Image 1 (tube, rainbow, N blue to C red):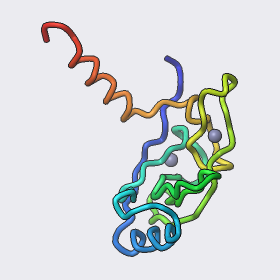
Image 2 (image 1 turned 135 degrees about the vertical axis):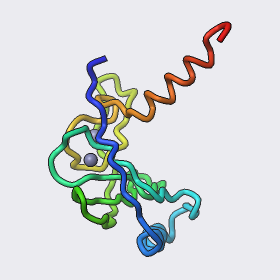
Image 3 (image 1 turned 120 degrees about the vertical axis):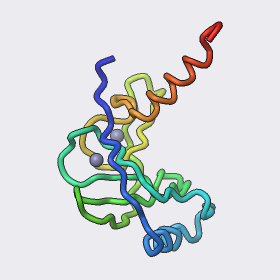
Image 4 (image 1 turned 90 degrees about the horizontal axis):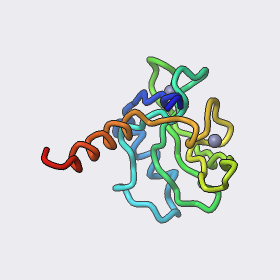
Length: 129
Ligand SMILES: [Zn+2]
Ligand SMILES: [Zn+2]
């Protein structure tokens, strides 16, 4: 259980960037409901450089997605980036972070929000509680 946590810093797109993200997604099979209004940074905690949060998965073959990119304390801007081509040694795990990301791949880091969800599930399945 020594995998480092993800950064998990969030930003807010606001109306104009929401529109811009959907324009970038025009021509792909996405709907406004697929948009993440408050993207969460996927990178390993205490990474260098800007934060990267998924705004809109374009469901493209190369895994391209609209990413919100922001500096600490600054507002986000949008970039379309293909998915990281990384695969784990077993080939079972794909990386859902943007190509060229810093820090560990998806299977090497731990999302603190997923930890919370797993802990809640574990509590619900305890007998007699
Ligand atoms: Zn970050
Ligand atoms: Zn990766």
